[in-house]
Structure formats: structure tokens, C-alpha cells
Length: 297
Image (cartoon, rainbow, N blue to C red; front, side, top):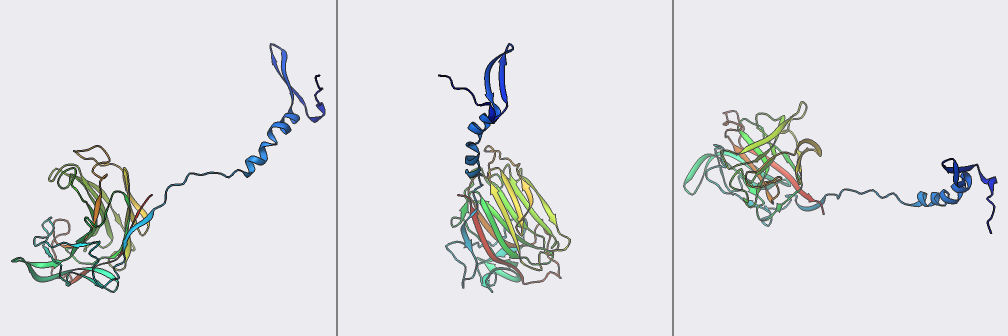
């Protein structure tokens, strides 16, 4: 038996076809019967927002021990500098690499040090994490204080652990921080890639400060490296982004899709900074307070 529709609940609405009603409903009744039961459900259902994975600490060193942690670092010894027409000899002597006041100290000296029969006017320190700390992508932060003076060249950088795409710089180089000792208010960040030297390419820029002298205090230098993108950080703030590079021997994002390791060094002289002058202060200290490495799960 057909039950009459209660029209007291709302206005009658109809849908017509060729002028004839084919469906009738009462707006208030339909709203109450259909929509109202859904409202409480919508109100109580939680809003689900997809969140980016957060960076997780995976490796660090606070340099608080009595000596360098050799499970994490290797001291590089090189009687002929590090290329670039640099003037220093790298040694493992405590005069050049040591712990001091809770910091790693890489010290450049004018002391005519010698290794294996080679004597050079300047000595300094350089360490790397190769085969001890190697990462493909991550967030890298280093808190450090830099030395001042013409011809001093402190650097925080990364090199490929395995040169899959060829010799330097075909397999890449990531310069997180470079500063010329005579320009303490200019911070450099650079990528090297493309072909082997001398046909390699590089890209990057500089951050110029007006009220910060990088040699006067500790600052945190960082890099966020993800697939296809690099972001440089200074005291936690992004100051440069790069998304374009290439490799002659692999598709993008090569060569920056392989494990890299960390390098800290203090060079003396070379084409980038020029040679020291009589006023350059020696000994000169590059002090690293800590390093932290993060990755996403």
C-alpha cells in the first residue's frame, strides 16, 4: 500500500521530463534523511595529512675524545699538497691534526715540515671519512670556526667514494663550504661534475654577509642532498639551491646519485686564494666543533 508523503517537513521539489514530473522529493525531508546522518560522521573523522619523512640522525662526531676516532676518520698524508698549486704538506703530526678544547683542530704552520724526503714551507691537516662514513643523500651539518688571513683556504666538502663515472670531476664533488681567508664575509658553495679534468664543469654561487665575519665565531654549515636537488644551509637557513647538473657518463641525477664521503682540510695557497703574504698569521687554526649526518627513512 502506498504511503502518503508528509509534506509538512519541507517544500516539494520535482524533476520533470518533457514537462511531466518523473521524481518528487521534499527538500527538508531529504536533507534530514540523507545529509544529517552524514554530518556527525564527517565531524568526527580525523583529517589525514601526508607528511614528509623527517631527517633522522645516522652518524655524528662531537670531537670530545682525547684523539681522533679512527673508526670514523682517516688522516690524509700528502707531501705534495692537494692539487690546485697548493703550498702545504699534509701530515698526521699533532701540530697539524689534534683535539683541543672539545674541537678538532686542523692547523696550518710555516715550519718547513718534511715527509719521505720532501720538505715544504707550509704544513697543515686534512681528514676524510672514506669507507668509514659514506652516504647517498642526507642532511649534513658541521659547526666550525674559520681562520683569517691571505692565502688560507678552509673547506668542508664531499667526494665520491667510488669513481663510477670517471676521474675527477666526472664523478662529482660537493663543496659545502669554502672561504678565502682574506674574504671572511664571503661563503662559497659549489658543485663540480661533467667530464674528467680539464673539461669538467662547475656551478654555484656565493653568500655575501654585511654584519658577519666567518672567522670571528662558530657557525653551522650544511647541505641537504636529495635526489635531483641540493640545498646549502648557513646556521640552519637555506641560502642556495641547485637542481641542474649533468654527467657525460650517466643520466641525471648522475653523478650525484652515488655514495660520497666527507673531507675537512685547511689548504695554504693555490689558485683559488693566492699565496700567503708576510702578514698572514701562522699558526692558523680551522676548528670543527661537531658534525651531524641525517637521512630520511
